[in-house]
Amino acid sequence: MSDLTPKQIANLKQLLLERQAELEDLISNAEAGSRPVSLDQPIGRVSRVDALQQQSMSQASQRAAEKGLQQIAAALQRIASGDY
Image (cartoon, rainbow, N blue to C red; front, side):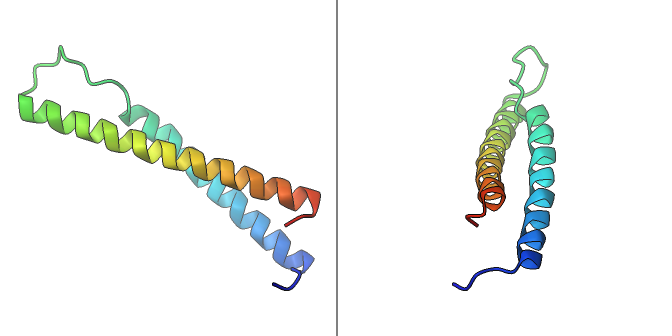
């Protein structure tokens, strides 16, 4: 692959920073959905199963976003060091 121009690198960095902010928002929203399901709530069995499933999906989404943030941090570090 050919070397990137400084303008292309700046554009990539901007896109990475924007995606980083999106993932941070997603993580903060996912934290609310991944709280433990209270067994004291007067909800039916099916509703409790649905709540547990939603919790599990929220936790998986949060883990994927955290991995994405790690990858973005690594890419930004490579840009800063000139290795991108």
